Length: 353
Image (cartoon, rainbow, N blue to C red):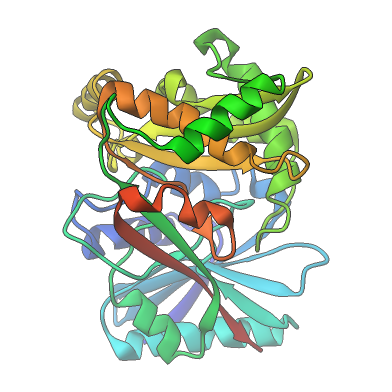
């Protein structure tokens, strides 16, 4: 085995991007190769915020593993991401030992992973698997990855869950959430779906609240609003605005909920066939994915009111949904627990140097 650290060699960029095709099927490969290439070449909108060291593990002339170390100024943590490895204990040990040695040599205090180069979104390891298609925005990985991390010195740093909820119709009753919804409306709050033509304005509202509400999450890094807009501009083509809600109080945005139809991995592999499927699913979804939610801490209880506004849309459509990723200790883990049909678990792992 040998380790290759590369910069912009076309051969290595191709090997890095091709490896997931050897590990996943076309149905569960969640990586967008164009985005991956832009990150590897430093052309991504977020590239200016971090330093990326890229590595491939070879067995003879065959690439069998890959990873990248993302680092930031004034941060003593090395973030290990874009992790892919064949199901081989020797490959995994060589890979993790190499990552550890790189971090130690360069003076970092710990390694956190899996964390892809991002400001808060693309990290976490899914640790339970089901025979279903992956969800848009949900991490997806081979079931042996968790074992590979643990066998090589990593321990669980954070634990998260996503709840899958049954479909409901207009006869559905949840008095606690409905009462909270009515209560906040009477206090002068408005909870509304933005108009399609107001997409850019909505992105700015979400940026402001994400920056304020998610700053305590591990690996959160602040980015400028223009880069946030650039990263999320593609959502305009996949969002159904009726399933996105913004809560306002005295003219100020104080809560949000962003949902999209479940596109599987089609949005990561754009071709004429998948584009046609995306357009069809946008118009006639089969399930919704609740991506992001946040409520200003000065407006406690508003979360249930916003969730009920989403529930009303789901009652009208009769569709099931999968909830936003909820960190342990957050009240959102218990929302509508009587309607949960499945629970998906994720972890963030750490290894001390």
